[in-house]
Structures are given as structure tokens and as C-alpha cells.
Picture 1 (spheres, helix red, strand yellow):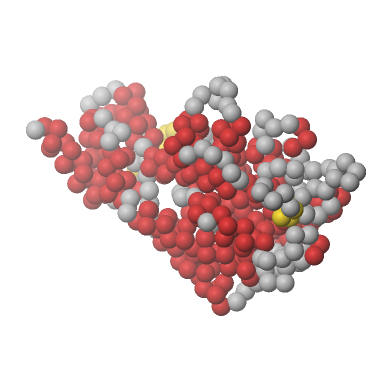
Picture 2 (cartoon, rainbow, N blue to C red):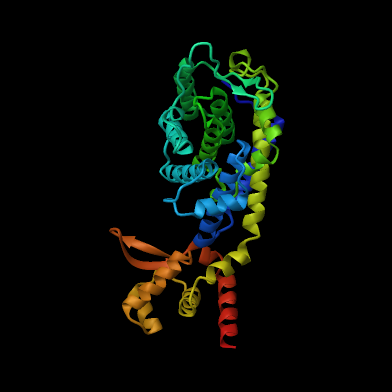
Length: 374
């Protein structure tokens, strides 16, 4: 198994990524903008990760396929990108639930990745026919690029990986790098190993607080130079697993590459988050009707711990039901959040986003209302 490595260069990468995580966490984005950015990021990841495996679809074609009615028939390249997108959604929910890393999780993700494939391609690979070598072959020369471990060793190797993830004191960034390498190297499935590895290393990052709010695509950085990606993960070792890839002598080659890609990715998310403030506010307000904007303006001007629908209905001169409807639209767009008592909404308050950007929201609404009067 690949060993964790800490040297000055790797520690510097970890420190810079930690700082970027703090920068991103200090920027409050509205729910509506965050949701849009997350969906767009998952589309980019689905495009990039399948592109690494040779999928021919362009980004615009991937976007169209993901948005298409799921009941329609899909060609194999289309099914691949949809499968990856569905796996991202699945892992997003599992991260919210803080689902531990497990063999079941690995198998479930590969099942998503290979949805619609023949039965033998789903689940752990089994024995090959006599005199047939299971290997990853060079598409041009036909020579084996990589000969993974025997199928009989796979369960024990996966158990070892799961135990490592759930017991190690290694930094989560190192753990994510190890998971990525081990799953590609163990190659437990007939197909879908690379995609499963990228998904689950991303899951480790998300699970342990390095998911950057689900914004951006780490897979894009692996896909920028596919040759560099494969060279880093192969580390110049022989094709046979048992001749060095089971215990690489210089694991820092892969770990350094992986952290460099995460650093580049985290920098991009910082830029995106910090440049989104004004666009964020304007974009979210654009979903509100004039009367909802006026209500938000009142709430911003009269910020208090909570507002009941009855109080609001008196202020705006409407029925209780109308007040609730307007508040619901403000909740949907991230400006207000409901307060629950025994699972029922009893009152509302301004969201953290609205409180952080009170002045900007007020200024923008007043400008919009003034221009609408003109």
C-alpha cells in the first residue's frame, strides 16, 4: 500500500490549501447561487472525468445530456456522463449524512458508474479464462500498460484500504490522495476504476471539510494534461503490480501531484467565490417579484431575531397566507430562513447571507425599485 509522506513541499501545499479553505468559508453565497454553481460544477466534473477515459462528448453536449429527460434512450458515451453525474449526487447526499468510507460505498459508486453495463462489469472482477491475462492494454501497441493484482487479492486489499481510511491520523488531503492511488492501482473492477477512484477521493475531501462547498471541479485539473496525470500515478514503476506498485518507493511523486492539483483547484474556487458577491446579490434578487423585494427591504431595515407571518401580514397589509407565500419565495432564494418548532414553521429570520450583505442588498433593491418607478 502507498505510504503517506510529509516533507516541506507537501506540508507547504497542505498549508496553502488550508488557507484557501478558510478564504472560501468566509464568503457567504446565497442558496440559489450556490445551487447553480454546484450543478454547473458537477456537469464540468462529469465531462472532465469521462474525458480522461476517452469519452468523445464536448462540454456543451454533456450539459445537454444531463438536462435531458432521463426516460429517453442514451448512447454509451451519454450514459457514461449521466452515470457520473448521478454518482456525484449520490455522494453529495452521503457526505451530508457523514457516511463512513466502506467497501459497500466503493461498490455502490462503481454500480452508479457502470449503470446500464453488462452484469459482469458491475462489482468486483473475477477470474479470467485460462491463459488470458487481465491487464490494461495500450490501445495502439496492444502491450499491457498495467497488470493489476490477482482477483483473489482484491477483497483483502480493499479491506486494508477501508481500515486505513477509518483509523489513520493522516491529514484528509493525504488520505484522499491515498484513496485515489489505491483504487486505481488495486483496479478492483473490470471497468470504471478510474472514475470510481476520482469520485471517492473527492468524497473524502468533501466528507472531511475540503469540498469547497461543492463548487468547482477537481477532475478538470486532472484532465488538463492526461499524460501528466497517468505518469504521476504510475510513478515510473514496472507494469506488474507486485513489482513495485503495491509499495511504491517514492510515493511523494503521486502525493505531490495530487496536492498540486487540489491547490490549483482551491485557488480557482477562492477567485470564483470572492468575485461573486455583487453578481450573487443581483442574481438572487432577479428571482424576486417587486412585492417580495419590498418585503425583503423591510426585513433588512428592521432586522430582528424572528418574524411571525402574522406580524408581517400586518406590516404589508395582506392576509396571513399572502405573507407566508412571499416569505417562502425569500426562503427559496436564500434571503430568509424558517424557524421550526416541532417540525412546523412558526417564524422566520434573515439568513446569514442577508445579514452579511445587508448594505449591499438594501442599496441594490432601492436601485431596482427606483428604476422600475421610472
